[in-house]
Amino acid sequence: MSTKKRFSIAPDLASGIRNTIQSASTNQGQLHYDMMSLDAIQPDPENPRKLSISHNEMVHGLLPTDPDYQKKIKERDALNELSESIKRIGIRNAIEVYKDGLKYRIVTGERRYWAAMLAGQKSVPVRISPKPEEFNLRYTQWVENINRQDLSLAEKLNNLILISEAHKSSNRGEFSEQALQNLLGISTIQAYRYFALLNADDKVIQLVNLGKINNLKLAQELCAMKDQGARNQVISWIRSSKDEVTSLVSFKESAGKKAASSTLSAGRSISLGKINNAQVAKKLFEIVLSDIKLDKYRHEFKNIDWSSSKAITKAFKSLFKSIELALSVEDPV
Amino acid sequence: MRIIAVVNNKGGVGKTTTSRFLAEYFSIVKNERVLALDMDPQANFSNRYLKMEIDPYQQEGRIPPIHSNYDPSSPEDKDWDGRSSIAGIFFGEMVFPYATYIPTLEISPSHSSKLLLAEAVTREEVVQKVYDQLSKFLALDDVKDSYDKIIIDTPPSKGPVTISVVRAATDILIPSIMEPQPMEGIYGMIHLWKSETLRRPKNNPLNLLGVLPNSFDRRGIIHKDHYDSLKNEMPDYVLESKIGRRLIYAEADAEGAAPPSIFMYPEKNIARQEILIACQEIHERMNAHVNQETF
Ligand SMILES: Nc1ncnc2c1ncn2[C@@H]1O[C@H](COP(=O)(O)OP(=O)(O)OP(=O)(O)O)[C@@H](O)[C@H]1O
Ligand SMILES: [Mg+2]
Image 1 (cartoon, rainbow over the protein chains, first blue to last red):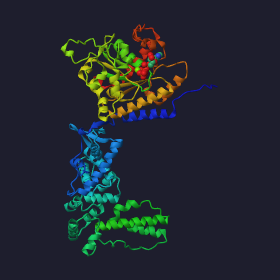
Image 2 (image 1 turned 45 degrees about the vertical axis):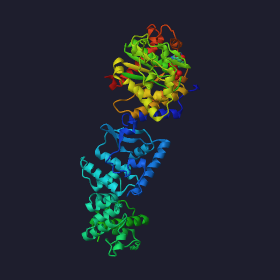
Image 3 (image 1 turned 120 degrees about the vertical axis):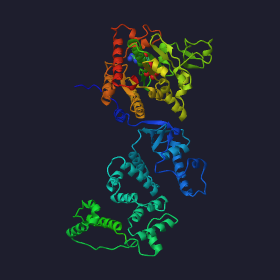
């Protein structure tokens, strides 16, 4: 038997070597990182998340008389914060660009680009990709934008319009609610609301673009109102309001008349009593769910544990929510 | 034109020795037009082919000798001091390669203080310039039309000068001794290769020719065990050939050695055969990567 000492590379060094080799071979030619002069980079003029503050204003300051003063101050402070961090630690995530004529155009990272400029950087790390297909470009911007809390409904809407147009012109099939839901990974209700907003008429879109409506649910409710008279009343009320309108409750109060939908005023609700037999509950559930208007919600109630009272109660709660939603859409007045 | 960089940030592992073997293999054995570049301030590579001089301002430093084409009486040369080094590319100077005792081998030597200066830059914009300078020089039509192979010896570091070499190269080779310390140098170089690989577009890859075991001791087990262990982690990138530890290599390294090149020894010479086999394997590995630069 041999007792000779054997040698080998230290385990962490060995795994380091293995991983590095693997990562380089799998990513060869996929990612193209480089340092690029800021002069060579251009923001995408169609990126829905446009900054309201201009480069000139960033450098030379803002006028307090500017109608967008508050918004711009907020933007500038956020950019300054980012720019300070860039001065200290540089840009950690490369800005994604593609070649467009003589320059490179930004896919993602517009804020990093402006902040780097504020920080006085001459060049920034970039990841150069081939020119993305229009649809993927818009989709990527949506994903980047949607993670930002301060994105307005108007900005989201504009991004969505670009996505839907790119979707239609790229043979991806019908741009349906379902497609939207799958694509963006949002709930059925969110997809339903966005879809309604996409198909909204000019009046609603105008309110959104003016910033009077910044709430998706409200915009969708407005789209769904069938009673033209009531709808026009609400629209002109919103248009004349000084600030952003967040719900219709205040309209109902200010108008002092019957609510625009049959929901009870805030804070009040009806108790539907108690059932002791799970079978009865199940039967009741099935009858209600068989209503044609609830078609689109049916798949949400497939896996209910009928042996757990907790689960049943929960299921009823969300069923009621769906009913309310379905009816508010179909039958607002 | 292929550009082969010999790299390892650990010192004394055989970078300069390997660079010499490659330069002499392609020029003497393959009869190709070779340009040797010495990017190391130590100037060891240059010393083998030129009589480098002591820098009058810096005792440790070396400067190239006066170029044979230099004519102080000619008005053309009035703005030139008669010395030319590859370090000149970092200072906007013209580069005039020197002839060597091998007809198809030319060298653009080191210049210690200039290379140290380029290596020491810290300002971001200047660093970026240094990174790109060698690529720009080697992309000149004059250079591309004049040589088949460029062989670059590098300093034992991962600084800006080494990065400029890696950026310019089409192929890199990592000579190493099969011992724990130099193994870490291999890891450092593979990292550098990976970053550069991620930086490059698909049509211009940086080929990793692999690790060449040097000073290999076939009798003990430490080198063999480390070799097997490394081969296990990166099977495609460890060369089969090994260069043994032999006095003759150190001797051939000495000034005034006769004969001056290993390829001028008799064909039966074991050391010469060993080096020939290693160079052939490297050559084959280069050919396995069909590089667009070849055409
Ligand atoms: N296989 C070998 N057998 C014997 N001596 C060798 C061998 N390889 C290199 N040497 C000697 O070891 C010393 C270091 O080698 P070399 O100069 O090639 O290493 P290097 O990596 O270029 O070093 P540095 O990092 O300092 O530039 C030299 O004196 C050289 O002659
Ligand atoms: Mg050396």
